[in-house]
Length: 111
Image (cartoon, rainbow, N blue to C red):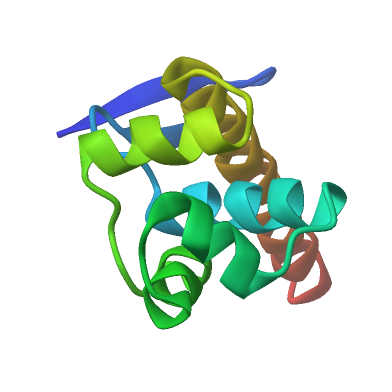
């Protein structure tokens, strides 16, 4: 079920799935934070006690992290799980807003 998140104008409505983290956004945040601290894929995978391939799948959104893995990833990044998910949600909303704006521009150009 989707929850509506209101925008600034009528019709400017974004939707997000409730209780389902967007795996690509979690992965993007993970990759950004890992790269900011200068850790390689294999170094960070070692911290999580998973393979580099598994970490790559998490970062690319090909693999969905389970709740305990999200807690583990957040701790390895020096965050709590809630902060990690908030960063992922912010990224998802930015992407949705950009998609919405691109759609508006395309619709305007096709008039």
